[in-house]
Length: 77
Image (cartoon, rainbow, N blue to C red; front, side, top):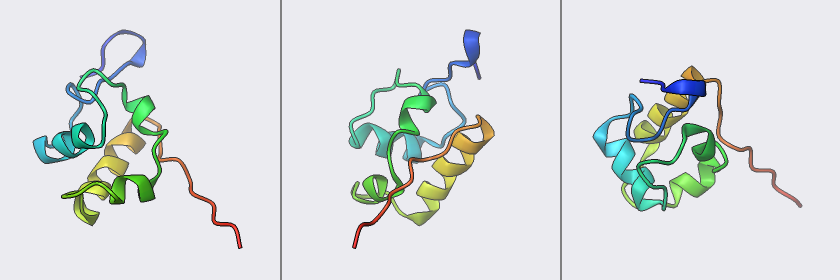
């Protein structure tokens, strides 16, 4: 799955086809590294049509497997 230097693209990851397609719909390309996906917040992913809680949890799980996590969103009062 991983290629040299720990780089794993969305397309070559263990993500389901549905999760990959949702990430593509969010503007990521198949060649995008999982590390780049981790720059997105959970709220940003939630705004993508067709991307529900189960798929978000799948993405978070695969990112964690590769030592990444989604960017935290901080709310200001």
